Length: 353
Image (cartoon, rainbow, N blue to C red; front, side, top):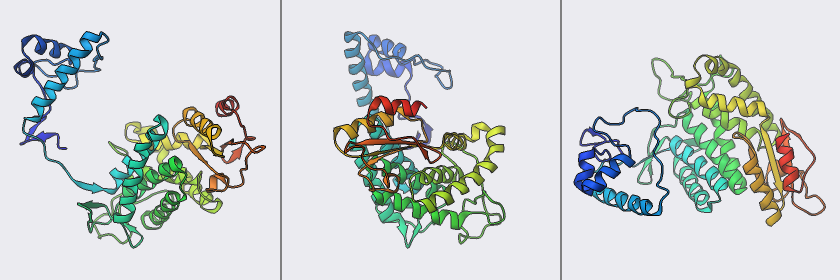
């Protein structure tokens, strides 16, 4: 949804104290202005908000009533336009967020939504082995994907693989990464990547911007996906991906040091790299395996890899058997693994180590 309506920024969404009183009446209008911190001069960049939900049950009921009336009034205002194109990179970010949040908070419906979005993207946007950037109303566009599309979608598919255990998502992510490395790498500079493919439209200067902003840069998204994939895929790809990430981080160090505000994703990738990255493989099924999985998800830092399933279901689970017939967790750092554990207490200790 647009931020502006009829050319006016915030027209649909913004309230003044007078507008609150017009909808709610004087008493509730004053209460709402105080509660929601609405002032005549506005609150743009006023600093941290102190807004809190009312704790008193009576005030809670008033809160709900006021919000419902304001929402109804807002729905009668002119409404913002809706951008209904599908962008591969942004949907890749959404797939990853839904998958990770679904696992962390126990919402299976979010994981299912991530899978539906991912299935649409690989069915509609992946044409003859190459990714297209946008689609609309189910019809893919002609614009070739840029580096951020490959990196963000691959990263989302890797999160979905961890959430579901389905090998399909890992295989698709690896295919995207291999294409990205082959088509976007700068052959003259190890660790450097262009934002457009080697067969894209010729420009005066082939763009290459490694800095992160509101979303990850194409290069940092690719680095993060490569690092995660290195912890999930087969040995040959794992070694190759890890070597590529080492080259990329070597170049990104200067950006992280001199302009950290524009290197958030790079710093996250570097932190995961320094941690190993941490890999947790949980083999087995049933309540005991579910308990170990929940403990692993709660106990690892961002950038870690957690995968649960039957032995040999996926590369990370290969060669990792049950322990005395019981589900077990294998904790690895830098591809060096501790002995398997079968209890939450032992798993927590292994993760703390």
